[in-house]
Image (cartoon, rainbow, N blue to C red; front, side, top):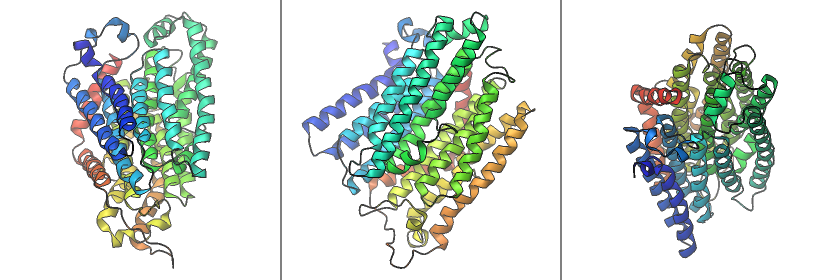
Length: 494
């Protein structure tokens, strides 16, 4: 029984997906029931995770399961972030799909199985589990992007993501095949032990490492593997964009940390001169600079947030790059950042849903013009969301960037320059975040242009209230959440 309890979050989502399929099959035309049930079941999965956080003993899990999935505080922490992001995305979908006449039950089935794949990916400690989780998560997301069947933008974004994602998955699979050939192991711990003992060809290991980093960098939308991001974010229904920005990115960083620290933590692979730390640092620098510079030129708020997500991937990669040295501090800063980024993005994208109605999304700056003065309560969540993404105190985003920055500075050396680039690029990004607030309160719609009229949706409002509460709470009293991240980081490296 204890063994089943330890994997209860995965079981809840698996049976929830099957249950939603049955509801959709036997209650046609009752998609709203599927939406409510999906949110409730995701919340149940979240509650089961929180209940397990107080007493996790991986030793109670049968060895046959321990070889494939991790049951530690880190895995449960990732479950919390993914379940929370998926549940809030389902709430946003409850209002969005009905408003845009897209309410069909299959959306929630795709959402819940994609969340299950993300949780499997975040817990993976074996290359086989990694690939199963990755594909389970990705296939559902491809379909959710193309969910608006009559939209050319949605089809284009889904096709680009699918084609590029297939290439990235193939590259990742090739890298895992090479590392298996070099070590004879598919489990991450076994790979790490062989590499630490010097029992593998160094050139083959470094080639496998490079291919694996490429495949995982694609999933977190880091430069130069970001090409799919703007079109997929813009074309997808906004609840799907929210899910991609929070759950998919969280799972990607989770497995990246496990791969680099557990499998490639040996002195050669983790060398600060020739291993993955300088490679990750270089990708982080490119992502921070390109994401913020490209974000300046956007007229679509959704595309701006897409480039913003690229920049934020760079910020998180800074902490990943120094995890070879300051392991606990670096991992904790990544975990805290992912939680803060989740609630901040739900606020930003959820507000765009709220401010768009009558079948039209609020996606451009002009769509937001004057909305803050006409509907201040509806505009407030968007203001809080963009301020948190900017890193303005006292919001969750401020401490997220602060912890990453102090972690990089604690290493010294070349990471000081990376920290300086982080600060300068964040200052550059403040322009397009503040531009949102300027249009909300200081601009008026062009003559004849329609004015934003906020939709009336209890689902969207509830999601925004929840996300807004945690954005402020994590900014005013960050200690409990940081302590939770530190506990998870300790179990990650133990």
